[in-house]
Image (tube, rainbow over all chains, first blue to last red; front, side, top):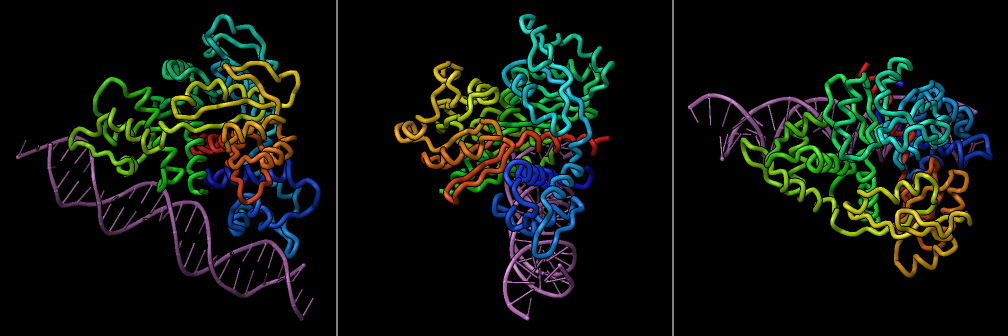
Length: 206
Length: 206
DNA sequence: TAGATTGTTAATCGATTAACAATC
DNA sequence: TAGATTGTTAATCGATTAACAATC
């Protein structure tokens, strides 16, 4: 999936949701229908679709199943992507149980915590593992990507340790900015920011 | 908070996280330091800060506390924002317990579900309420914003009901596209899209 | 003073929208 | 045929980066 911007990825994912759950009863959908449902410009939708290599049909639109499949290919849903989760709090366990991850090729292979009361407990078929086993498991399973769902107060400390163990990509769900070496990439997931953006949309509406 | 794009909101929120948890030991921070930590251009940081009405100090940078406070004002953290959550599954309950919401002015006033086994249970100080009480509570408490965390299969059905009850803004955590009247706004939170964006960053890195 | 940093303008880059020929 | 829809180019819009004078 090179050559597509984050904005395109975001829209393609939405088109896919649409085709998966909403448009299931007919063979074709047009760019203007998609655009109307998502409040976008129809030529933008056609451009996005063109990036997936899908050809439409004049007067009819795009074949729903064809389009769905092509988005899956473009975004790499069928390739398996291995991740660990560090932090078995409410958010971490919610993510472990998020059934849809598997559908999109995301395999959560282990869930770590350093609370001795949690270690050994089972969540969504995953045993919670002691954090000091991270280094060992990284080399055995060859996973370089972690989802970070620890309390913000310990986020930097846990990150330093994870980086030392060989982690290269951190999907950071904590509301903190992490200091990492140049070789490590942090991707920020920020619920507060999303909320503020939504609120902005609200104000604009009124 | 008019006149700021979503991208600016996102960055301002990150600056705020930085000032809240990471830069706590000194009075000043420069635009280039912020830029380095977040992998941004320093003039972009200065522009964002200018939008908050903060003046820096030549040779020293910006006063940390001053900047933090101004971001809070700009993004409206101190104004209380009332929301309901519909769907008391793992994600819904994780959000109820997300302590940081309160710090940012987001008050979760009730948690709804229609599973009779869940109704009456208490989560994070909130009793789970039967969904058929929604209409009643909307008029009593005057809340027009909901966080939707139900299973995707029932998302549209629940949305139709919520809209009928008077809901105007839906923060949609389900991986579905919702059909709503023009008067209702849906804001999509898409974990899968975020993951794919992260993966894109990974590929670019290697 | 020399060096560092802001604040801001102009230049560039990228993303979206408008428009329309092609054609089913 | 007439109408609808794609695929794509050109125009516009918005966001980022480069550059630099001002100044502490």
